[in-house]
Image (tube, rainbow, N blue to C red):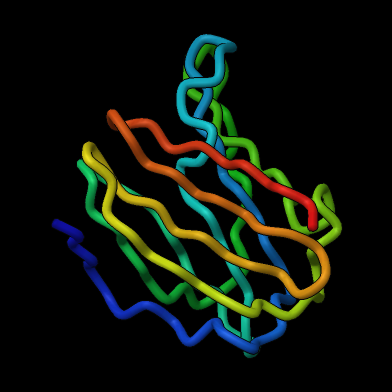
Length: 133
């Protein structure tokens, strides 16, 4: 059963101005490919993240800021500009699909003429996959 916490933003037929992924690294190894996904649509920042199969949407007042890694800390949370990486920054989102999975959930964003971004949360891990059109 699909559970969504928060109000999903209106994304269909909207311009995605920014798309940034915060990862989670532990002792130099990638622990979570997508800790939080940040989208800027209609001059507003939105957070998308998952926990225990639940899809969370939050409004964020400002752009994401890198978390400074403390000396000796095993934790690191780098920001990856996937909008630029996949050449989907400033592209129109033509569809947004949220669906349940057996052990999680998936949010799919379709970008006009560019491709489809799958954000899949399963077995308490969140991954990205981009398929070009």
